[in-house]
Each structure stands twice: as C-alpha cells, then as structure tokens.
Image 1 (cartoon, rainbow, N blue to C red):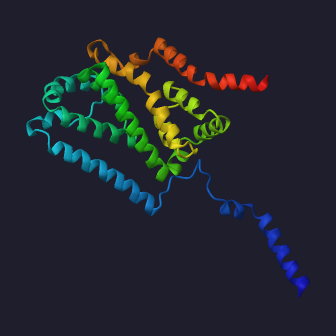
Image 2 (cartoon, helix red, strand yellow):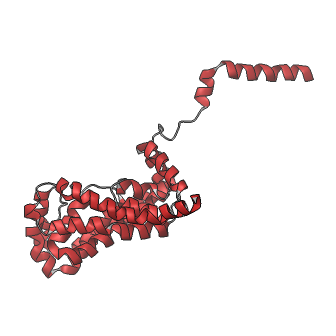
Image 3 (tube, rainbow, N blue to C red):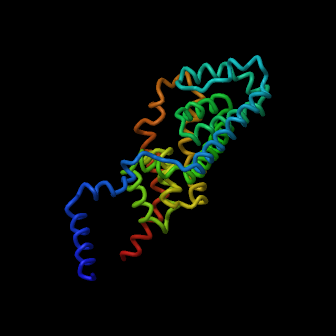
Length: 276
C-alpha cells in the first residue's frame, strides 16, 4: 500500500509537469495585465468620498445668488473659457468672495482627488481674479489639499488602478524610492518642483510605494510653489497667453530643474562623503 500511494503521487506530479496548460490556468494574472478590481468596502469608500464632495459643492452653490448660476456653473477647459469666466466672475468674486472661494476650493479639490483634467485652467483663473500673492496662496492650498485627498483615496482603492495604468512607471518609482529612503523628502521635492513625473501619478502612487504622508504633504506644499507662481502670474496676462504650452517653455523648464536640483544637493554631498 505504501508503494502504491507513492506511485500515485509520482504519477500526479508528472502529469502536472507534462500539462503546461494546467499550470498556466492556475497561474494568477500579473498586476500589469489584470484589470483593477475593487472589494465591496473599497467601492463603498470611493462612493462615500464622491458623495461627500458632491454634497459640499451642492451646498455651496445653493448659497450663491441664483442669477449668476449660468455664468459660474462651468469648468474651464481652454484659455477662451478662462477669459470668459474672468469677465463673468470678476464682480461675483468681489461681491461674494467667501462663497466664491469656498466653491473654487471645492471644485479644485474635487478635480485633484478624482484626476479630472483642467486644474491648470483653475490656477490661471485664480491669478486672473486675485493676483499673484492671493491667487498663489489659494492655488497652493487647494492643490495640496486635493493631492492629499487623492493620496488617501489611492491608499484605499488605488493599488489595482495604478498597477494597471502605469505598471512600468510604478516599478521605476518604487525602485527609486527604495534607493533614497534616507533623503526621501529631498527626492520628493525634486519630483514636485520639476516635471520629471506627472503630479497625478505621484499622488496616486505615493501611498502604494509607502511614502509617509508627512513627507508627501511637506514636499507637495513646498514643491508646488514654483509651478503655481508661474501659472498664477500668467493668469494676470491672459490676453498675451496663446497656449498652455507657453507656460512651460524651455527657459521655464531650465529654471524649474535648477530649483529642483537644489533639493537633491544634500543627497549628492552625502554620497560623496560616503565614497571618500
């Protein structure tokens, strides 16, 4: 009986090796090819965040004067939309500043959280309506809040989505983070200041590669200042701006990379001392 059982087990093992299709069937899909799936808890969390933002925006616009609804209930999608909104909202933003700021912040944070394109036009609008200083503070605050909200949402449900959308970029980001554990803040500042990686990807991937929130928050708050200044300043001269691409010409990109390189100087100096 003992020999018979051994023969049966050996035959079963051999059958498994001879049938590669069975092994393929049992092999789970890799993260790079499998479509994102959400558990019931993750789906409910995403729905709750969405409902919260929608309810907040709805309540804010309920308090707005009814006659301005046709002029303010729109998202800018082009420079022409920004110019039109500037003309329509100039008086409203001055007479109902609290309502406007609350509505602006809610929309900006909503767009950042759910990766809706167009925040650059919102930044231009802030510069056009409030100037460089006030507009810059407003943009940095809302961009940081939106990025933080996206960070927490991604921590709940983002792993399958990021692994599906950007598998190669995620592996590269994870390897770079692993190399720079000691100077992670410096590296994150460099990424935020320079256009090395898209901000949307950074927001979504940071919790997945275990970047602590306090480092993410500090790097976002400080690192977004140069780009926000450039965009808000351009909003003061909308008539001279022909395309969004004009915001980041070669000269501007060089300046951003020079500013970003300052953030990684301590890392370079530390490595030099280690090698010496």
